Structure formats: C-alpha cells, structure tokens
Length: 362
Image (cartoon, rainbow, N blue to C red; front, side, top):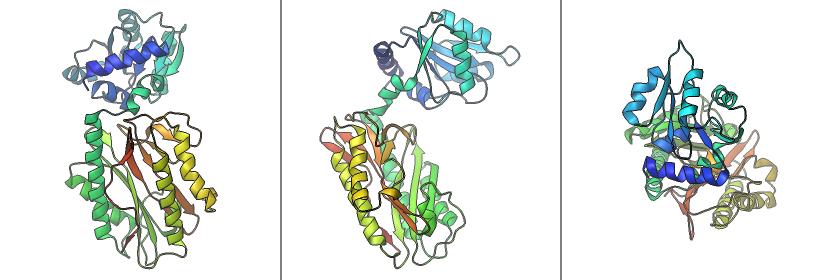
C-alpha cells in the first residue's frame, strides 16, 4: 500500500471522527503511515496531517535523513532555538491553528503531545487509535504475506530449540539457540522467553541462568522481526517424565485454544473469543490461574489492537491478525501457554504456524 493510499484512508477516517489535525510521533504509527519513522529521541518531532496537507516538525539534525525518505514539507528547528517557533509556522502553513479536535499519537512522548496541545489551547483532543489505529488492524494481502513469512521464521527457531533442548542447559543457553536461528534467517530477535519448571508460572518470566532439569515443563515464547512486521509463537517442551497432572492441564489449554479458534469469526466481538477460551479453563477448575487476556493484535508492533480481552467490544473483521494464547500458571509448579497467530478470513481464522501444539518430549 503506497503512502498516498494510506494518507487518503487516514484522511477519510479523520473526517469520520471529526479530527482536524493528527500528530504522529517517531514510532509505529508514523511507520505505518510513511513506511519509515524518524530517529526517536528527546527532541520534539511530529508528522502532522490535516484534511489536505501534511508535513513534519523536525529537529534540524535529523532533517537530511528524513528528506532522503520523504518529499513532504518540513519545519525544522535547531537545539539553540527550541521547537516552538517551528511548530507555530507548521500549524500556520497547514492551516491548523483553529483546529477543534487534535488526534494525538498515544505512543508519542507526553512532552511532545503537551507542546502541541499548549499551542492549540482551543482544541479538544482524541487519540490516534480512533483514526490510524482502526486502519492498522486490518492487514493488506502483502502485509499478510509478510506475517506468514515471519511465522515460518518462528517455526524454524522453535524447531531449533526443540533439537537442542536437554537437561543441564540453562534458559539462556536455549535462548541463544533461538537467537542464532533468527539471525540465520536474517531476522532481528525481539524476545525469547524460556521459563523452566516453576519459572514457567510467570507469564513474562525474564529468561536467566536457571538450569533445566529432568521432569521440567518449559515454556518457550519467541518473536522476531524481518521487514516491518513482528512474529509471536509459544510452545511447550517437557524434559523426561512430566510433572503430575501436566498432561491434564495441557489438554485443558489446548481445548481453550480450539474454543477460541472456533469462536473467531467476522462480526464477532473480541470479548466472545476471550470468553470462549476462558470458559473452558474455568469449567476445568483453573480459572484463577488464567491471569491474562486471550490475545492481542500483531503487526508493526508485537502487541497492538485488536486486543482479545473479556471486555473488548471490538468487532472482528476479515484481515485482522491476532494471537490466541490462553495459559494456566500454577505457582511454584509449572505454567502452560500455547499460542497461535491467526489471520481472520471470511470463513474463519488461518493459523500461521505449521507446528503441532503437543508438548515436545525431550
């Protein structure tokens, strides 16, 4: 999708939401709109969009790089002067000084947002999620292909982990195997959560030097980036004889994944997908041990809308990409999480990973 096409779609959403001016900071929203984002630091920088114009408030030291990527106007400022005069000039030339509603990028630094809002005291404000966020949720065919490519990279890294895992390794040892697989595929590692034994009961365990032992269940949650998009995949491994009732708990989580996949259809509210998974786990007696949402959107960011939560009224549409990742976490014992990333189509979800969800037995 070209920049012109994206800006046209963005302006249509701005009109629908009554947004006169949209301000995007260096980060994922700017990247979606332009195909790149400027260097993020403490110097105020914004991409400003109105109904018929657009341009940058830009620190002068970053201007040459930005001009090599975009022909849109720039209002530059130097460290010695500060950004205020350049911002006033930008707003005047964009005819935005009388804006009634400003859409503020919620991922932008607060001091950038306050600088803009202070310059427009008459304006109310909303968030970019109303405009750009709605557009980012549905991926184009090319974007879907990139997500499929990244899912295959995750699959290969998970297979490398399964081939290497053994008692006596540390979590960090296994994370290094995963990292190398990502690099071999030309992908940048984003995260490698390896939680062995009781560490697996912490959903966001910080991978460390814990040693994997015979009888451990190991949570392996990985993600990388190649191109513009992120990946995410979680599977389980068991070293030797699994803990008591491991197989029962794994079966419950697998049933929750299947229930969520069955519930994920166009026109359904995201909360219904979460509730389908949560119902299975609650009915099995483990409801208090399912401590997070069922899923999150995937794209430029690893976590983005739509969020598959118990309270989300977001209606699922074809082209949305999100994870389904219920889990059960038994403190002091083990955790189990199984995660798929899916593309939603008219006839239901396409699961991107080709790997089975059975625990790998080492």
